[in-house]
Every structure is written in C-alpha cells, then in structure tokens.
Amino acid sequence: MVEVAKLHLDHTPRWPPGITPNVPVKLHHVLGRYRSCPACLAEGRHVDHAAHHGLWQLASVRTCPVHGCYLVSLPPRQNGNDTFDVMRLLERYAPVAPVSAAAADLELERYLRHRVQSGASDGWLDRLPFHVAAQTCEGFGLLLTHGADAKRDLVAPADWAAAGTAGFRVLRGGPHAFRAKLKDLQMAQPLDSTLYRTRFRVFFEWLRYRDDDPDFDVIRDIVRDFVFRNFPIAEGQVVLGQPCPEQYVHSLATARSTFGISGWKLGRRLAAIGLAQRSSVSKQFVLNQYVPANIVRDIATGIDVLLNATEAAHVVGIDRIMMAKFTTRGLIPRYYAEHNSVPLYHPRDLEVFLDKLRELAAKETLSEQLFDIPETSRRLSMPVDRVTHIIVENHLKLYADKAPQARFRDFRVSIDALRMAFAAEQDGAIKPAEAAKRMRVSIRTVRGLIDQGILEPRIVREHQTARIRRYVTSRSVEKFATKYITVVDLAAQSGRLPGAEAVLQVDRGVQPLELHARCNMIFRRNDLPSRSFFPATDGVFNG
Image 1 (tube, rainbow, N blue to C red):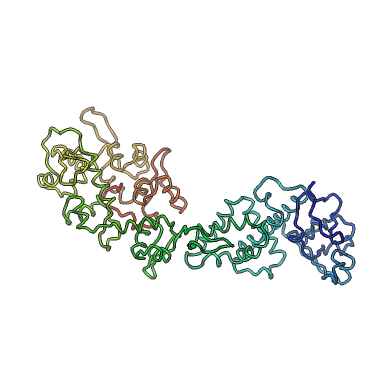
Image 2: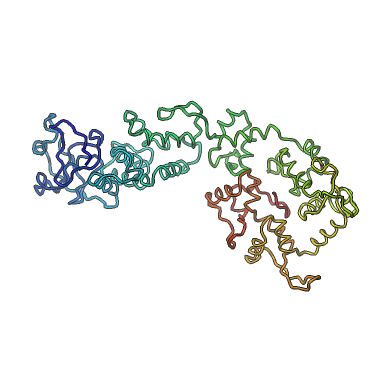
C-alpha cells in the first residue's frame, strides 16, 4: 500500500472504511472546498454513511455514488480549525435540491475513483501523477467542449464533468491521440486566421500557470513540441518556457522574410504540389497547411536555377519554338503549370527528358537506315513533337554517338520502325502489354480498367496465331490520361515517394479507383485538390 501524502494531523481527511487510497496524491493540488451530497444531508447520513467522504474532497470528484447527484460546497469555514469539522460547517448550511448527473459525463470520475481505490494500471495516463491526469483531462476537455474562449470561473460542475470526460476519452489514448486531437483543433480553422495562443487559449493559459509544478512537464513538453512543429514559430521564440531550436514550418509571410523569395512564385509552386490554392476572393494564394521548412528551402533553391524557354531549348538542343511544342505535348513540363505564366524550366526536368532518350540508345549500331528525329519527321510529314512522342511511348531504339552526353539532335532512329509504330497507333488497337507500358502500370491494372469500363476493349484476331485476343483502343488509352493519373505519375510530379503520396491523398479524402487486388493505385484528376497541378496532356502520361 502506498500511503497518501500527509497534511497536518488536524487537517488530514478521514477516508471511510474500505476506501484506503492506493495512489500517491498531492492533496494541495486536488482538494477543493469541503463538499457534501445534498441528498445525504437531507437523510441525515452525512456522518456515518460510507459515501466516500474523503473522495468527495478531490476537486475532480463531483457526484455522490449513492444518489447520483452533484455535490454542493458547504459554507466557508470561519477559521482554520473548522476546515474538516463537518458539524461546524453545517451550522450555516441552507438545504438545496439535488441535481442529478448524467452517467455519460462521469467517465473521468469513475476512472479517478477506481485509481484511488485500486491503484493505477500501466497505461500512459495512469503513469502520470494523479493530479496531473485529473487536471489535464478537465483542462483539455474544457477546450474541446466549450472552445478556446471559455472562462474557467464560470463553468458549472456539470460542464466540468462533461469536459473531464471529453478530455479523458482523448488522453487515455496516449500522446499520439493527444497530438492528433491538437492537430484537429488546429485544422478546424483556416490557417493564419489565428495562432496557437488563440486556438488553444483556455488550455494553454491554464498550462502556463502550472509552471510552478514540474509534474506537468510531460504535458508541457508534448504541447510545446506540437506548437514548434505545427506553427510558424521562429528559432529562439519562447513557448512554455523553452526557446524553439529551429523553425520547422513556414507561412507565406515567414517564408518570404526568411528566404527572400517572391510570394507569388512561392505560392504558385506550392499550389503545384498541392500545399496551396488560389483564393477566389483576393486572387492570392492560400495555404492548405503550413509548409515544412525543407520544402520552402528546396523551392527557393530551385527558383534560383530556373531557365527561360530560350535557355532551356539550348540545353536540350532544339529551338525555342520546338521547346514550346514539346511543352504543349507534355514531353517537358514547365516549372509553373499555369498556362498564363511565363514559361520557366528546371534543369532537372530537362535532364529527365534527355535521359529518356539516352535510355533508348542501343549499345550497337543498328542495321536499318537511320535519320535524326527532325529529318525523320520531315520524311514522314509528321510534327517533330509527335514523332518524339511515338519514340518515347513505344520505346523505339535510338542510336547516338556519345550517348551519355547526347542531346536531342544527336539521336538517330529507324524510319521503318517508326512507320510500324505509327501504323499500329493508326489502326486504333494496341495490346494490353503495350497499353500498360504507355500508362506505366501493370497488365493486371489494364485488365481491371477494362473490366471497370474505363478502357475500351477491342476484339482482334492476331494474324500470326489466328487467336482471338482482347486488345485496347489507343483512343481510350489517350482519353484515360485526361481524366485519371496513377500514383506513380502523381508522385513524380510532386517530388514525393509513391507510398507517401498515396497516404497523403487518402488522408485528404481522395479515394482511388476500386480495382482488383495488386493493381496500381489510380486517382481521378477531378478529385485532386489542385487541378492545375495535373494538366491533361492529349494522351501523354507524365513521368
């Protein structure tokens, strides 16, 4: 048995028989005014009745277990000797009608009674000191039930009971549930409308006034760390007695001042990766969530190396007009996706395009007649961007001297192979394997899309085997790209890993297509938060 902390002998509460506490309690933290049950007093049972008189003096215990009504405070004592002299306190007591308590609001109280009588278990909340657990449940619950502007001195006992239960239901889930609920409260209001002091005021101010008790450090540490990592707190700014070690997230304003980056450029890029959107009122950009500092840093660094259309065309080895056509075709993405923005390109995207061609370069000299891509385009009377698209999508072999450093005009292609690929597209039907290659998904996924009616099947008799096969119309493959996007393509454009991208979109409420097991994850473009980030590109799948 762990003894309860002792007060002066004359002021030690008398615990009733069978209710010996099994938990260390700091009585000066949990004792309130002397209280009793109005129903017990009316029945004359206030002296000998085993109604847990000791427990009644714990501030968070507010009801009588026999009558189920709220306790009432007895008149204030006249001197220190009357603190626990029940008969003296009753001399000025005016009887009041009992007020019944709702059983659903007493979860915290039942937990505290059990903890006093039987001891704490091994849960995170049970490992907190008794007064910390009780007061934190009520303080945090008051924020949940009455909002940040609640006045503690105006809260009635019934409201305190309901608040304690609300806080208990969260905190019994441990620190993870505590942080998750803090995040819910943060996201319940638009960003930048209020900061943490305003959003959590009644709870935060109460926690600040507990700074004289080190037992509350575990709660302060959780709240402080949450504030540091979820609000734009500058390095060195003090929160709950400790300075912020570094700034973890930024608002548009703090990002501009810290990195010296244009708010317009930053906003457009954040909109492209789904972290901001254009306001319909002010035409300015509004954040969906505060931006991690590393993302802002990467954007600031990326903007410094952007190239205009002329510079980008020189890197690729084409002219500026051809650069515009490649962009329209979706072969090379612009850094800012908006159509009315000045075309700027990131060197990384230019290298990705050239690397696609370099990967197609054969290691040996091809036997067929070879021409460079512009010449092949002229001979076939097809636009250069269309020819390039066919080469990339059909993985046609190329040849180039010094392939690792080759630029666009260095590559040669077989005109016969190009004619065959073009003829296959003109015929209007392609094999599921070819469709999967173009869409960068598995063959199982293509079949699932056919079963869902998203891709259009075409029954074909193969010339070589005379077998009847189910092919896919190339037109439905191109149409698919305008309405849907795979999680791999989505991740490639956002810069995240596919797994992280999938979790992020599902957390935002974006549901993927319902396909068979082991199919690739695919989203509808219309469901994504920022449609401007994923432009439909005439049947081209961005990688």
